[in-house]
Amino acid sequence: MKKDYLLKERPMRALFLFALPMIIGNLFQQFYTMADSMVVGRYVSENALAAVGASYSLTNVFICVAIGGGVGASILTSRYFGAQEYGRMKKSISTALLTFLAVSLILAVLGLFFGQEFMIFLKTPEDILPMAVEYLNIYFMGLPFLFMYNVLSSMFNALGRSRIPLYLLIFSSVFNIVLDIYLVRSLGLGIAGVAWATLIAQGISALVSFVIFLKELQAYPENTRTVTQEPQSPERTAITRFVHKYYSFRELSTMCRVALPSIFQQSTVSIGMMLVQSVVNSFGPQMLAGFSAGMRVESICIVPMAALGNAMSSYTAQNLGAKQKDRVVKGYHSALGLVAFFALLLCLILELFHSAIIASFLGSDGTALALETGSSYLRFIGFFFALIGLKMCTDGLLRGAADMKMFTIANLANLSLRVIFAVTMAPRCGIAMVWYAVPLGWLVNFLISYGEYRTGKWQVKSSNS
Image (cartoon, rainbow, N blue to C red):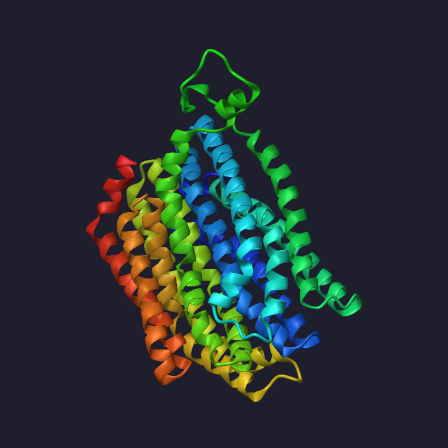
């Protein structure tokens, strides 16, 4: 497949070929996070599973910051790639990598110092709090690797090389699962074992990804006329020479206009779930364990929709960079057709196998209450994945066109509605109100984003960006 296939192939084929490696890769990523839960639930205890679940809402926020930042930064890379401005493309890439390295180090330090306070704020049950904090502390130490890998994956995707992060993710996923079993079953490290397994696997994958990406960039000739010029001083130190060559504050400013709303969009679900986590925690460890298992399954089901949304972003950015606006509309319609296919498939799977799926997390010692909570969630949410697919594809188009105002408003409405509904209704009507809020937020988000798409303003925004 040629590197410019997003610009020339039939839209549905181009989007599917671009999204497929991301779907497979993200499934492997979700499978090894799911393996963490399964190993802990089966070989440690149901309380340990609840502790991982209580940590998940917080750790997922950091994952979404990394993914959202990478996707947002890659829009600029896709635009320069489509316009063949390889000099500016390289400088924007190095700017993004250095920026997110600094961000990841800051967040890691904050997490290590305030992780326990976060979990207390989320009303984590006292009997699982020490295990949750232990898991989080190890997780935060690996945060720079997590950021490096996710940002590099987005950059590979922006260059049309989505198979490379797929192969790396398959390796790290399999390696992580093997380490999970060895560290927990053989060495008896408990919940710390799955945290160390994730850190080691992600660290190796991130470093290998970085080396491959440097070699990949050598294939693109640098046109120095297209490189953003920074103000020069007569006397330069080694640091200023490095900054001038690899870092551009102008590119950073342009990148932030897309990356910051993208981070917000990617993390709205996670932030919302973190804010309502205290509601779920108040129902006790058994319901928390069942709900945590259901959330792990939901995160897998969302993978195809998220991949199509990210594919739509790169597809839109590249085609707008190449002045092919009509092709963007055709691609959007094709993406919605793919959403319908995946939504129907997911609904059938969850309606038929919800109980067996939840039981696989809990093992033979799982309580009936945990099983019923997880199964009820899956039975309900299975009917609504089309909504998040519509939302993500529409958001992806707006993000790729740098039309970020209504994009941000739509995701803020999604987050606010979910939190308000869950926090006000669940204490009165039961835990089911937490998941009723989910499709309601997705629907409102889609309607706002689709209204912006129908105005055609995104075409004007792309011309001015």
